[in-house]
Length: 324
Ligand code: NDP
Ligand code: GDP
Image (cartoon, rainbow, N blue to C red; front, side, top):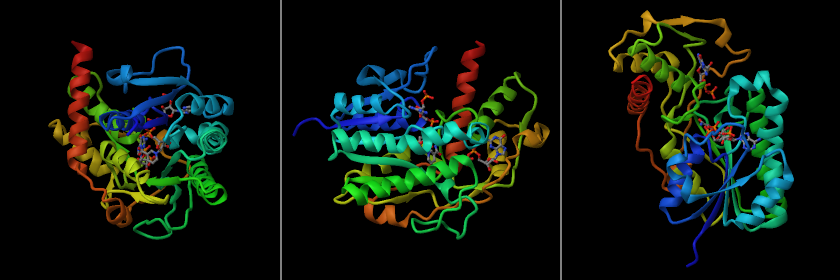
C-alpha cells in the first residue's frame, strides 16, 4: 500500500504538533501549512521538523490553500488552524471571524476544487455550547455561543456539515472539549497557572492575577484528543463527534492542584483582577462522549490531576533551564 499523505493546518500549535507526531508514527507523509513570521515559531515541532514538509500559507488566503492541496495531494486534511483564544476574540472579532469562520470555507473550497475525495477534519469546539442548554452536552445539544470565537466556530461547524451534504465530501466535525498539555498556549488558564506556579516556586514571580475562578471546564490531555481526530477519518462514513472526559472541574480546583503539587498554598498568591473577567462567560462545560467511545473505540489515558501535575512538572523543568 502506498504511503498515506496528510495535510495539517495549524501545525505549529498545540494540537498540530501532537497530531503530526501521531501521523508520523503511523507512517504518514506529513505536510504542514505554516504562516510566514518574522521570528521563529517552531517551539512545539522543532523536534520533528525534519520529518514534516512545510508549505507557506494562511487560512485567509485561498490561493495559498489551493496551492498547498496541490503540493501535498493529501488523503486526509486536518483543519486545526484558527485564532483559538476566546479572550482575544473580543479584542479582534473581525480577524477571529476571518480565520476561525471564513478560513474553514477557504480550506473546504481548496479541498473541493483540487482533491474532493480527501477526508476532511474540522476542529470544532465545546465553546459552541456556550451558555449550555443541557448538561451533559452531546452531539445534538443546541449551540449557544458566548464569544466571537464561539460564534465563529459555530459557522465552521455548519459549513463543514454543509459541504458534506452539498458535495458528498468526507467531512467530519470534532466537537472537542478543552484539552491541554505542556504545549498549550501560555494565555490559556491551565498553562497560565502552571507557568506561574513554576515561576513563583523558583522565585521569579510573587503573585498571579486571574479572572473568574468559579467557571467549570471538562479538561483532557491533547495527546489523547488527537487520536480521536485520526479515528474520525478512518471510519466508513463521515460524522460528528463530541470528545471529552465526562468530568468537570472549577478553575479554583485547577489552581489548588497546581499550587499544592509545588508545595504552595494558592491563597497566598492569587489576586482577582477584573481585567481577566470576560464580557460573557461560559459557566459550565461537561461533555458526554459515549458516541465516540462506542463508534470510534476512542478512550482516554490521562486524567485531570495527572494532566495538571504533568504541566507543572514540565514548566518547573523549563523555567529551571531558563534561569540556569
Ligand atoms: P493553537 O492556538 O495552539 O494553534 C493554532 C494554530 O493555528 C497555530 O499553528 C497558528 O499558527 C495557526 N493559525 C492561526 N491563524 C492562522 C491563519 N490565519 N492561517 C494559518 N494558520 C493559522 O490551538 P490548538 O492547537 O489548541 O487548537 C487547535 C484547533 O482546535 C483550533 O482550531 C482550536 O480553536 C480548536 N480547539 C481547541 C481546543 C483546545 O482545548 N485546545 C478545544 C476545541 C477546539 P501560528 O503558530 O502562526 O500562530
Ligand atoms: P476557554 O474555555 O477556551 O475560554 O479556555 P481558557 O483556558 O482561556 O479559560 C477557561 C476558563 O478559565 C474561563 O472560564 C475563563 O474565564 C477562566 N479564567 C479565569 N481566570 C483566567 C485567566 O486569567 N486567564 C484565562 N485564560 N482564563 C481564565
